[in-house]
Length: 171
Image (cartoon, rainbow, N blue to C red):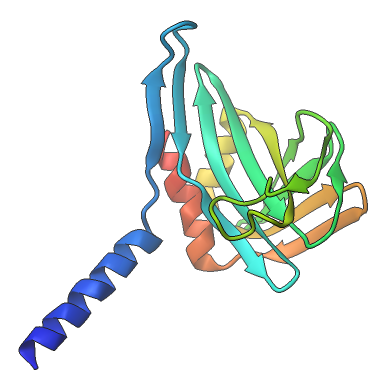
C-alpha cells in the first residue's frame, strides 16, 4: 500500500511539474550572425471544442515577438497588421499587430503530434518593452484575435494566464 501511495505521489508530482514547465527552449548566440536568441517553450493559451491556441515569446537581440499558433477547424487568414488584443484584470488592453499576411496550412497550428493534420496558422506579433511590462503587471483575462473572417473572443483560464506571466519572466 505504501509503495502504491508513493508511486501515485511521484506521478502527480511529474504531472504538476509538466503543467507548469515553462522553460527556455532556445538560449544561444547564432554562429553566423552573432544574434542572441531566446525562445520560451510553447504553452497553451486556450483550448475549446472550436479550436485551440498556443503561444511562446521570442527575443532576438532586442526584438521581442509574441509567437502564436491557432487552429479553428477551418481555413482562415490573418492579414498584416491585424491585431491580437489582451484584456488584463486591471482594465488595461494590450494590442499587438501581426507582422505579415499568413493563411492556414496543414499542421501549422500544431505544437506536437496533436493537430499535425489539421488546418492551423503560425503568426508573429512584435511586442514592445512597455507592452511586456503591462502584461507582467496584470493578469490576462480575455483575448481577441482578428482574422480575415472577423474576430474571436476567448476567456483565459487563470492557469493559462499564469503561463503568460511565467514565460515573460524567462526572457
